[in-house]
Image (cartoon, rainbow, N blue to C red; front, side):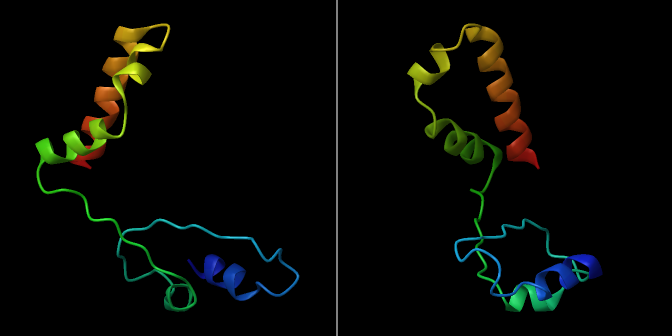
Length: 89
């Protein structure tokens, strides 16, 4: 974490003006406060419950997208596994 803080503190006007640094983290005490203070914070609260979380994930994909794959059954199984993993983590 100290290395991250140093890197962010060393940003200056020589960096491209459209440069963006995206970080994802859990709330941990070791995360540098200066990085949080100098950035824009975004939070996304997951839906409550496994079913609601799965429904949200499936609402973002169309049946045509699921059926467009060359290996439809494998793709649907993989997509469900990914959504389920995402819902429980």
